[in-house]
Length: 69
Image (cartoon, rainbow, N blue to C red; front, side, top):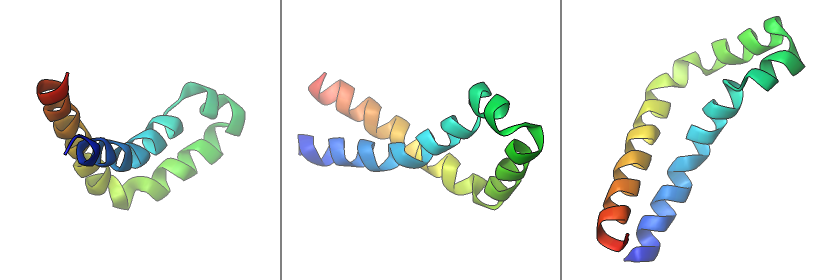
């Protein structure tokens, strides 16, 4: 069961990491403000999915830490 929780954490971390990468100030400086804003606007329709994956990641990490920590 431990590996199942690790798989859930890993799979839910991918979209969370994507949003974290997009909000990184270095990406802002590398792309410029217009390209950075355009990328964030394209992510707008998926904001509820990112919130869902963030909740799944937090819950799975908490459960894993309590059970196997």
